[in-house]
Amino acid sequence: MRLLLVIDTYPPARISGALQMRDLAQALAAQGYRPLVLTPALDGVERLESEGDVQVLRVPAPRTKDVPYWRRTLAELVLPWILVRGLRRSALRNDHWDGVVWYSPTIFLGPLVRALKRRHACPGYLIVRDLFPDWAVDAGVMRRVALPYRFFKWIERFQYRQADVIGVQTPSNVELVAKDAPAGTRIEVLHNWLSAPARSAPDACPSLGALDGRINFVYAGNMGVAQDMDAFVELARRLVDRPDVGFVFVGRGSEAARLKALAGGLDNLCVLDEVAPEVLPALLARCHVGIVALHPAHATHNIPGKLLTYLHAGLPVLARVNSNNDLVALVEREGVGLVVAGDNPALLYAQAIKLIESPGLRAQMGGAGAALAKRMFSPASAAHQVAASLQESAQHRDA
Image (tube, rainbow, N blue to C red; front, side, top):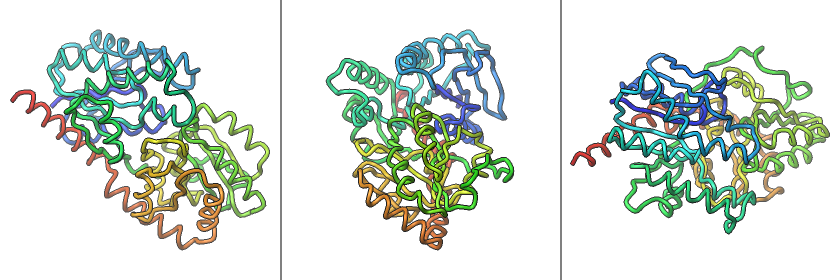
């Protein structure tokens, strides 16, 4: 079975979606599915690479990350046509694909998938990791009655129409996606996944300066509007008189520069640029609690990839998420951390203090998290589910 995986970012990019699709491709290859990853070339050089049993075709395309919103929208709008043209001009243009797997965000890959499915008469599996544009409305970035929302909503629904199977992160998202997907579309829970990272040397970690040796809360990931990181800046401000406590934010995103400016006035908060995946384990080893941040106004559900990173590192989590998020039940049921549902600064402070003052509780929750990562969030499990769903869809097509 020959599978084509499409995503708008892939390693050496360091964001969670890129790492997840790398892990999925490697797991599919290990299970004999001969995957090709089709992705933009960050350096503008078109090439076909082999990474073990995974082929990667990189096609020059406009940047979609760390650019103004209007440029990102235009770049993502033309991306499917650029990628399909690159595939048709490549040495693999005559290969046959038995299934197409694509990752959202971005929501703009629908035209590419439609073209590939028509040519190869194969099923498609859509991996949905956030529900844009609805989360943008929840976060106040756009209004539901505005033209941009209607435009993005049309693009989202077009993408859903190309999928034989849609894999969402949590049970509650099944109902949300079903409202916009065509009747009869198979929608299933596909848990997030992440390989256990290789251990890096301690000296690979960037300096934490005055925070070395403290009980450090760490946030590792995208810092944008959807995360509402100001709540944790305020938490750091409330704990500034605790010389044994620190906060480390590491990553990239639209809010990173502003957060760095805010950190300049706090000696217990350090904001670092994104680090390589092989360096992150050494940084996390010098921290004690992983931060999960989602805007409390969200109505959608999310199990962020950074949660899996913390679980693999044996860190308990302090999560501030929207009310009724499925993540609340997961964290509480599995005993891997403490959660604040909604905007409640007093409770966030109280939960932080509980973790600061209880090293035994941190160790217990960290151990439970490491066990959960192995049991529920493995790339092998995700690869098996995606491949099995595609095979079942192919059989229905042939029936």
